[in-house]
Length: 273
Image (cartoon, rainbow, N blue to C red):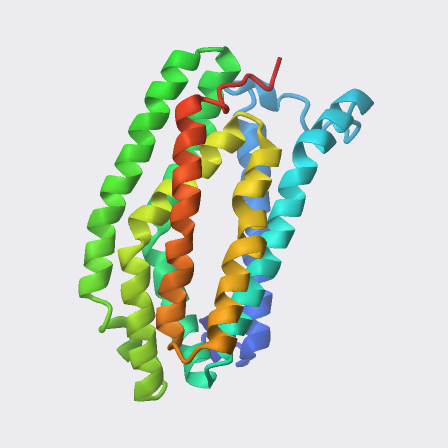
């Protein structure tokens, strides 16, 4: 705010100010983590000697590489998939671009609950898997997924009921606000589905099944979601919000697959041994 609009005697830098502020925030985040880990190294002994050297044993590097490369590819391809989806929707006009931008911003605020549940899976379930307590890992995972879906139903309901309010906060035309409202309504309806997929994804990843998560996430995005969006946009007269909803409906396939994988316990694996 200060750098963008030039408050407290500083010049108004606009978008450059936003970029500078982002860099400053990231540096502060890094310093907080470094300082906290050093000050608490006696309590959390795994921090001791962490900054003494950057040397990592070659066998450990290879293990990280084999396990992590599918995740790296997944994140990169997922980003490409999101760009391709947005490009498809943008073919319906600039009002759609503006509306979707507004909707995504609001959605990011509301979906923080199930995003946090995914982090909880990574931490809690990963700890149980690392200790070899598979029974407790399965029990805790089931509870976290159920809680994530339940809270998403509540949050999604609130989001749906207030969907018309948030676009009014933006300086844009009425059509863009209407499109944004409809996008937000769809995102609110599918939030429980997204919550299940998100926590299931992190469950599978916690067990080190990175190839499965790659197929489950970015591969599905590029092989199913993106083609559906482009075909419907290019070959039909369906509106962008309808296409958006149908693309989300395709995720029900992932829900079924995710449920089966979770139920079979393919993720019950101790990757630290």
